[in-house]
Image: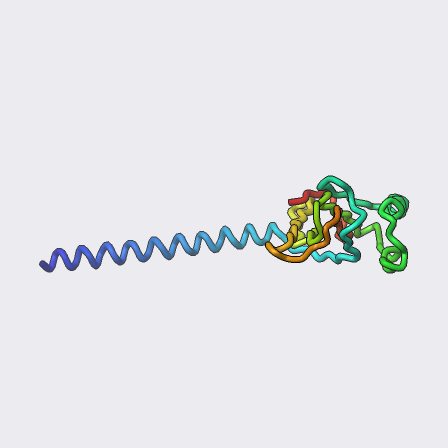
Length: 158
């Protein structure tokens, strides 16, 4: 009987120790993964339900000439985005994120977060959809948003 108790106690001790080692190695992996990912600041400066492109797409603008061309295409008034001319294109870029054409209102596209992985800027977008039974505009909409983001060598949208 004593042998059974000692055996059970021995196996419990061994199993507890191995779990602690696995937890510590998991924490080490999380730390190195978190060190690779750096949360990056961004600022949404304009958002609209009308006037965007018909397809889900994005455009990154890194100079004032292309910015003015895109603002003219989207018919955005300068008063609506007054601080757009203050963007420093040496360190920042402008992201135009288009959701595409939708059959009703109530849709919106947002930037959830941005992470910098080495030389790549990963932009996580979020699509807001109307709730079931919600009163929405019965018209075609093309939601989009405009944001100031840090400049990078490579961009990806998720």
